[in-house]
Length: 306
Figure (cartoon, helix red, strand yellow):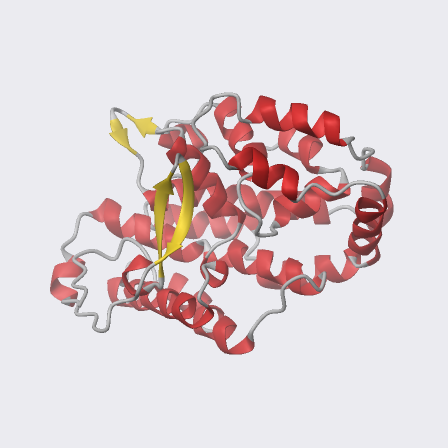
């Protein structure tokens, strides 16, 4: 039995548990509770920042869903309709409920159920959660206190939406012109070592990054696939996203942070976190698409959450 006292995360009903193992943040198998009991009176009187954190965790399913759309469009991981609808069918309704604690909690619970059904966190998280994992492994604090999961994910979600909108604002012709040549494996090893130089990301992060590194014919074919489906990707991603300005307003109204500085991140830490996040999971996200397309670093360099 699980008895939550705040609508702060989607983990109450989930199958997995996000833990740090050997220095690396990962999601490990964990049985879900048989029973969930929540008193709406208790939830309503939880500290405001816990509600805001939960709202941000729920809002993350917008860009997280777009990441699943990406891999579905590329034929890498098909969307399972029965799992998808658990989260996405009522997501905009939950988010538009404002300060309705019950709606937000029900949305978070539904997200956990989707992870139970899928036996993976794909339905609930994408690149935005990878940013959060990086900053957590770096022991991010603000005013002497650890930053909540939801608030880190909030900044990650804004970054994900901005990355997607920036990239897919370009036509396929413009994206092709901007794409830089893929690095060699030796060059990539140096990049990975530089991004992980702090040494706080566990022993497996570099191995994961190099294991999914494409070179030769493999990267040529992947780029061809990405650019051949660029217009379809744009159409499907923009259908899934809430436009950045509107998305930011929803988060603001829920009391969520809107800039990296509000959770203690410098601009350098913020941008480093985006690049480093691409290394730590095999799961394919917008970060992998932009990296393989030769577009990631130039977009991140100019990224601002304005």
